[in-house]
Image (cartoon, rainbow, N blue to C red; front, side, top):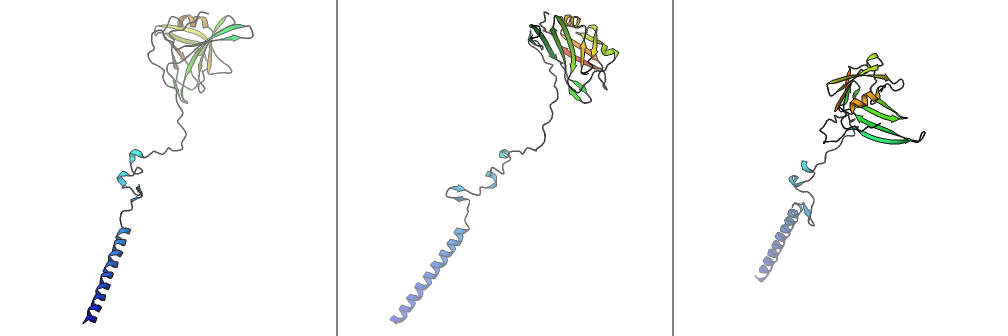
Length: 220
Protein backbone atom coordinates (compact mmCIF):
# COMPACT_ATOMS: atom_id res chain seq x y z
CA UNK A 1 0.00 0.00 0.00
CA UNK A 2 2.78 2.39 0.90
CA UNK A 3 4.46 1.47 -2.39
CA UNK A 4 1.36 2.40 -4.37
CA UNK A 5 1.08 5.80 -2.65
CA UNK A 6 4.70 6.53 -3.50
CA UNK A 7 4.10 5.75 -7.19
CA UNK A 8 0.96 7.93 -7.23
CA UNK A 9 2.90 10.83 -5.67
CA UNK A 10 5.66 10.57 -8.30
CA UNK A 11 3.12 10.56 -11.16
CA UNK A 12 1.31 13.58 -9.73
CA UNK A 13 4.56 15.49 -9.45
CA UNK A 14 5.44 14.70 -13.07
CA UNK A 15 2.01 15.94 -14.22
CA UNK A 16 2.34 19.23 -12.41
CA UNK A 17 5.80 19.73 -13.92
CA UNK A 18 4.46 19.07 -17.40
CA UNK A 19 1.64 21.60 -16.96
CA UNK A 20 4.11 24.18 -15.65
CA UNK A 21 6.45 23.68 -18.63
CA UNK A 22 3.56 23.99 -21.05
CA UNK A 23 2.38 27.24 -19.48
CA UNK A 24 5.92 28.63 -19.59
CA UNK A 25 6.16 27.80 -23.30
CA UNK A 26 2.84 29.51 -24.01
CA UNK A 27 3.95 32.57 -22.09
CA UNK A 28 7.12 32.79 -24.19
CA UNK A 29 5.12 32.47 -27.42
CA UNK A 30 2.71 35.15 -26.32
CA UNK A 31 5.60 37.41 -25.39
CA UNK A 32 7.12 37.00 -28.86
CA UNK A 33 3.80 38.15 -30.38
CA UNK A 34 3.38 41.26 -28.21
CA UNK A 35 3.55 44.82 -29.65
CA UNK A 36 7.14 45.64 -30.57
CA UNK A 37 6.49 49.29 -31.09
CA UNK A 38 8.30 50.22 -27.88
CA UNK A 39 11.76 48.99 -26.96
CA UNK A 40 13.79 50.75 -24.30
CA UNK A 41 11.31 53.59 -24.43
CA UNK A 42 11.89 54.17 -28.16
CA UNK A 43 9.01 54.07 -30.62
CA UNK A 44 10.01 51.91 -33.57
CA UNK A 45 6.76 51.58 -35.46
CA UNK A 46 4.41 54.44 -34.50
CA UNK A 47 0.80 54.24 -35.68
CA UNK A 48 0.29 55.67 -39.20
CA UNK A 49 -1.68 58.63 -37.86
CA UNK A 50 1.32 59.79 -35.79
CA UNK A 51 3.99 59.11 -38.37
CA UNK A 52 5.51 62.39 -39.46
CA UNK A 53 6.35 60.87 -42.83
CA UNK A 54 2.67 60.09 -43.45
CA UNK A 55 1.53 63.51 -42.31
CA UNK A 56 1.07 65.82 -45.32
CA UNK A 57 1.73 68.84 -43.13
CA UNK A 58 5.25 67.59 -42.43
CA UNK A 59 6.01 66.47 -45.96
CA UNK A 60 8.42 68.74 -47.80
CA UNK A 61 7.57 69.13 -51.49
CA UNK A 62 10.22 68.12 -53.96
CA UNK A 63 11.56 70.74 -56.33
CA UNK A 64 11.82 69.77 -59.96
CA UNK A 65 15.18 70.44 -61.56
CA UNK A 66 13.85 72.99 -64.02
CA UNK A 67 15.35 76.38 -64.94
CA UNK A 68 13.87 79.41 -63.24
CA UNK A 69 11.45 81.47 -65.29
CA UNK A 70 13.02 84.52 -66.89
CA UNK A 71 11.72 87.65 -65.20
CA UNK A 72 9.90 90.13 -67.39
CA UNK A 73 9.86 93.92 -66.97
CA UNK A 74 7.07 95.13 -64.75
CA UNK A 75 5.13 98.36 -64.74
CA UNK A 76 6.61 100.84 -62.29
CA UNK A 77 3.49 102.97 -62.37
CA UNK A 78 2.65 103.89 -58.79
CA UNK A 79 1.86 107.00 -56.84
CA UNK A 80 4.93 108.99 -55.81
CA UNK A 81 5.22 111.01 -52.61
CA UNK A 82 5.02 114.76 -53.07
CA UNK A 83 8.29 116.09 -54.46
CA UNK A 84 9.61 112.63 -55.37
CA UNK A 85 11.12 111.87 -58.76
CA UNK A 86 11.75 108.85 -60.95
CA UNK A 87 14.91 110.42 -62.33
CA UNK A 88 18.33 109.06 -61.40
CA UNK A 89 20.80 111.94 -61.58
CA UNK A 90 24.58 111.63 -61.31
CA UNK A 91 27.72 113.53 -62.28
CA UNK A 92 31.20 112.46 -63.31
CA UNK A 93 34.50 114.23 -63.91
CA UNK A 94 35.59 114.33 -67.54
CA UNK A 95 39.33 113.80 -67.19
CA UNK A 96 39.95 114.97 -70.72
CA UNK A 97 38.79 118.53 -70.09
CA UNK A 98 38.72 118.41 -66.26
CA UNK A 99 35.08 119.40 -66.11
CA UNK A 100 32.06 117.59 -64.76
CA UNK A 101 29.56 115.78 -66.93
CA UNK A 102 25.97 115.54 -65.72
CA UNK A 103 23.53 112.70 -66.37
CA UNK A 104 19.82 112.12 -65.79
CA UNK A 105 18.26 108.78 -66.59
CA UNK A 106 14.66 107.58 -66.36
CA UNK A 107 12.98 104.24 -67.15
CA UNK A 108 9.68 103.99 -68.98
CA UNK A 109 6.66 103.78 -66.71
CA UNK A 110 5.37 100.78 -68.66
CA UNK A 111 7.32 98.09 -70.55
CA UNK A 112 6.96 97.72 -74.30
CA UNK A 113 5.26 94.48 -75.29
CA UNK A 114 7.00 93.34 -78.47
CA UNK A 115 6.81 90.07 -80.34
CA UNK A 116 10.13 89.07 -78.79
CA UNK A 117 8.82 89.79 -75.29
CA UNK A 118 8.47 92.70 -72.87
CA UNK A 119 11.33 95.18 -72.66
CA UNK A 120 11.90 98.52 -70.95
CA UNK A 121 12.70 101.79 -72.61
CA UNK A 122 14.69 104.67 -71.20
CA UNK A 123 15.52 108.33 -71.70
CA UNK A 124 19.04 109.61 -71.01
CA UNK A 125 19.95 113.27 -70.67
CA UNK A 126 23.60 114.32 -70.66
CA UNK A 127 25.43 117.62 -70.32
CA UNK A 128 28.94 117.49 -71.72
CA UNK A 129 31.33 120.00 -73.30
CA UNK A 130 28.86 122.79 -72.61
CA UNK A 131 25.90 121.28 -74.44
CA UNK A 132 22.93 119.05 -73.71
CA UNK A 133 22.31 115.67 -75.34
CA UNK A 134 19.30 113.37 -75.19
CA UNK A 135 18.94 109.72 -76.19
CA UNK A 136 15.77 107.63 -76.31
CA UNK A 137 16.65 103.95 -76.06
CA UNK A 138 15.15 100.49 -75.79
CA UNK A 139 16.62 97.49 -74.03
CA UNK A 140 18.14 94.72 -76.12
CA UNK A 141 15.49 93.07 -78.28
CA UNK A 142 14.02 96.18 -79.90
CA UNK A 143 15.20 98.26 -82.85
CA UNK A 144 13.86 101.60 -84.00
CA UNK A 145 12.94 101.87 -87.66
CA UNK A 146 15.10 104.19 -89.74
CA UNK A 147 12.36 106.28 -91.31
CA UNK A 148 11.00 109.81 -91.58
CA UNK A 149 8.71 109.38 -88.58
CA UNK A 150 11.54 108.61 -86.20
CA UNK A 151 13.62 111.38 -87.76
CA UNK A 152 10.81 113.76 -86.75
CA UNK A 153 9.71 112.01 -83.56
CA UNK A 154 6.50 113.11 -81.85
CA UNK A 155 6.61 113.99 -78.14
CA UNK A 156 3.35 114.58 -76.27
CA UNK A 157 3.48 116.44 -72.93
CA UNK A 158 0.70 115.94 -70.36
CA UNK A 159 -1.59 114.74 -73.15
CA UNK A 160 -2.11 118.32 -74.28
CA UNK A 161 0.99 119.65 -76.04
CA UNK A 162 2.59 117.91 -79.01
CA UNK A 163 6.11 118.77 -80.12
CA UNK A 164 7.99 117.30 -83.07
CA UNK A 165 11.68 116.73 -82.35
CA UNK A 166 14.50 116.10 -84.77
CA UNK A 167 15.81 112.57 -84.13
CA UNK A 168 18.25 110.13 -85.68
CA UNK A 169 18.39 106.35 -85.27
CA UNK A 170 21.93 105.33 -84.40
CA UNK A 171 23.75 103.53 -87.20
CA UNK A 172 25.58 101.17 -84.85
CA UNK A 173 22.99 101.03 -82.06
CA UNK A 174 19.55 100.79 -83.71
CA UNK A 175 17.89 100.55 -80.29
CA UNK A 176 18.74 104.24 -79.74
CA UNK A 177 17.41 107.51 -81.17
CA UNK A 178 19.57 110.57 -80.63
CA UNK A 179 17.31 113.59 -80.17
CA UNK A 180 18.97 116.60 -81.71
CA UNK A 181 16.60 119.12 -80.10
CA UNK A 182 17.78 118.26 -76.59
CA UNK A 183 17.40 121.79 -75.18
CA UNK A 184 13.85 122.03 -76.50
CA UNK A 185 12.98 118.62 -75.02
CA UNK A 186 14.49 119.39 -71.60
CA UNK A 187 12.71 122.74 -71.35
CA UNK A 188 9.34 121.01 -71.87
CA UNK A 189 10.16 118.17 -69.47
CA UNK A 190 10.90 120.61 -66.63
CA UNK A 191 7.34 121.95 -66.77
CA UNK A 192 5.56 118.62 -67.38
CA UNK A 193 4.49 115.53 -65.48
CA UNK A 194 4.16 112.98 -68.27
CA UNK A 195 5.91 112.54 -71.61
CA UNK A 196 4.83 110.16 -74.38
CA UNK A 197 7.01 109.42 -77.40
CA UNK A 198 5.40 107.92 -80.49
CA UNK A 199 7.97 105.85 -82.40
CA UNK A 200 8.16 103.10 -85.00
CA UNK A 201 9.85 99.84 -84.03
CA UNK A 202 11.07 97.27 -86.55
CA UNK A 203 8.46 94.56 -87.33
CA UNK A 204 6.12 95.94 -84.66
CA UNK A 205 3.09 98.15 -84.38
CA UNK A 206 3.86 101.82 -83.61
CA UNK A 207 4.81 102.19 -79.95
CA UNK A 208 3.87 104.75 -77.33
CA UNK A 209 6.72 105.09 -74.84
CA UNK A 210 5.54 106.66 -71.59
CA UNK A 211 7.66 108.45 -68.98
CA UNK A 212 6.58 110.14 -65.76
CA UNK A 213 9.07 112.98 -65.89
CA UNK A 214 8.07 115.20 -62.97
CA UNK A 215 10.84 116.30 -60.64
CA UNK A 216 13.81 116.74 -63.00
CA UNK A 217 16.48 119.00 -61.47
CA UNK A 218 18.46 120.31 -64.45
CA UNK A 219 20.18 123.68 -64.56
CA UNK A 220 22.56 123.12 -67.44
